Amino acid sequence: MTLLYALDLLGTAAFAASGAWAGVRRQMDLLGVLVLGLVTAIGGGTLRDILLGDTPPFCLKNETYLYVSIAVSLLTFWGHRYLERLEHPLLYFDAVGLATFVVIGTEKAIAFHTGFIGVVTMGVMTATAGGVIRDVLSNQVPLILRKEIYASACLAGAILLYLLNLLHWPRPLCVLPAALLVIALRLLAIRHNWALPRAIHSESPPKES
Image 1 (tube, one colour):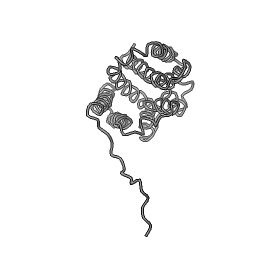
Image 2 (tube, helix red, strand yellow):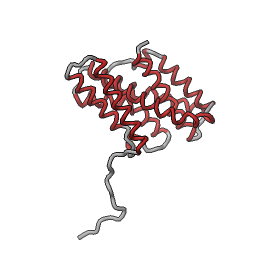
Image 3 (cartoon, helix red, strand yellow):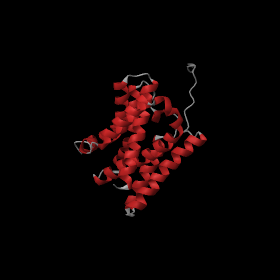
Image 4 (cartoon, helix red, strand yellow):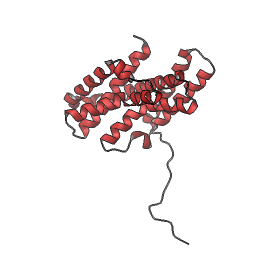
């Protein structure tokens, strides 16, 4: 088992836990919790593979991802009373998973010879699309549309990986800085409450002249 594959499974577990936890908080039944756990963990990579024409998607070629997602979702459902104690460590696992998904999605798009926008989009989509589906299904505004530094951290990592690949750097020297950038930006944003600027819009309509 390679390190990247191990981190991929770790990220899958962390994302499944976050999806299942969202279902628990919305007081969904067991099926609802399982669905949210699964779509959060594998939704981004599945959508990426469909758009790139790589079918069947990765999770059907290697069902370990499905088993991990289901197992973690069930553990979250039955042990949700204890999950709050792990909420802080889960943030670190989530950041590692985010970085791993960005790297895997970006590298796969590069391998399929897509252009710059396609490469970056696939990288960001792999890391964030599952969370978007989770938030929509649980009736929340998707996290990437809120003020948190989340998708923008993925964007920065995907761009860096693409640029380093253009320079023909060895694969480890491309992957590691990109992954560390995503992790650093995400954790620093959580610690210091960083956010992107927002447009200030007055509630009152403008006066007509």
